[in-house]
Image (cartoon, rainbow, N blue to C red; front, top):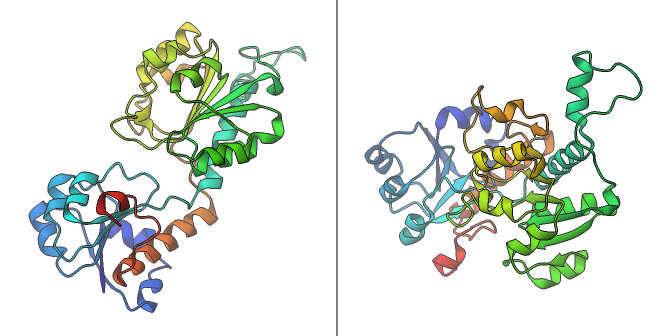
Length: 327
């Protein structure tokens, strides 16, 4: 039983204090830095699982030794792995889907509240000496929470946690997710819509909780924004590339979009001269929604536990291509 860490320098820091889990399970491991597919083919021989910090595209996946049963990513997102190539090879792809649900949901709610109440704009204005008297009001006018409808693009674990955390505010909820059973919507008192356009038409706040696929790449674009309500609030704590940022900037300039709260970006870090950094109605964070002390521990433990399960010949709960593999 053997595991390969693809990104050895990262692994030594990232898993420090947790590698004993492998030792205790009788699983050996090796550390390797990213290299050519030919090098990966050689170093992966005899390993049951590869834990990667780096993308594995088609050529890299195809170069993996026949002994490799699984590729494990240290994140919820797995768009950096060529799923089709892995499935063709019979290799499981495993993410860690549940290590930071509470954290990302809370971050999303925080971005929504900041947008609704212009919190960051008040902070910037006051710090720069802009508070002249008690009548100071900053930014766009805002409505009572209980008059608003929030739409969920994606209603998986994080979306549902956001719904729970927002439920005390009296907001109405609608959601679009064709992959979630109707019973989930009914249990949570959320109106299910059959199309994204229906959601755009009724939502004052739109939260993005999707994975990045060919289907969702630049899903939020000029055409989609045109179908949204005027002054809509748009929040994204999923993948940055789901958002066409140029279209969002146009929407902010025109006033079609009232405010945004983004934690993830197609290009990270954001270029220092990007105009969105000058937008008063944009609340910006640095792909940090996932973090808490507890989440960091969960991620490491669940990642290593998944590798142990694979080495023991088990099918992990977090294998994302079970259907393609016929499992």
